[in-house]
Amino acid sequence: MKELGRRAAMRTRIAPMLAVSDAKAAMEFYKAAFRARVLWDLDGAVAGLEIDGAPFFLAEEAPKYGTREPASEGFTTVRIELLVDDPVAVPKGPQPIRRMLQGAVLDPFGHLWLIGKILE
Image 1 (tube, rainbow, N blue to C red):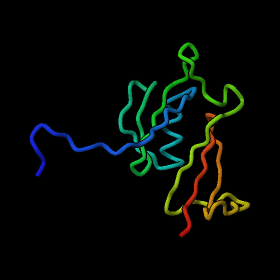
Image 2 (cartoon, rainbow, N blue to C red):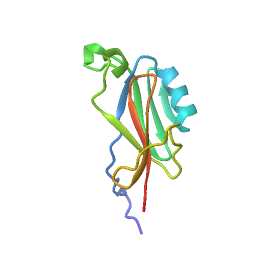
Image 3 (cartoon, rainbow, N blue to C red):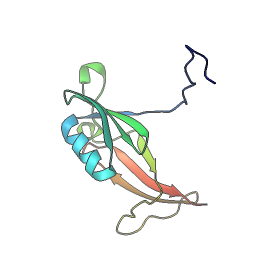
Image 4 (cartoon, rainbow, N blue to C red):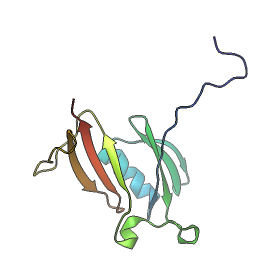
């Protein structure tokens, strides 16, 4: 039984904040491409989403705070790995890496997403 006033321990997770040029367009893209669900939306400039329980955030780029979308810089320093039960292969077919079926897409905002499944 849970004690009164005690909260359950939160599981540690990493939730990336993606800088984008147009948060509303990004929300629509991620909903259509990855079946993301919007958890909250602060007037279209900052939003929280999830893909099958995995949270991530969007914020419009703000150079004065040191955030720019990768597309505006022409490169990205981070790749996002999305592990799912049924990945859709890219047309040429991904090559197994570390016993993973994996494909990659670059979203319209310059973020690199690797989509795969761990093979057992």
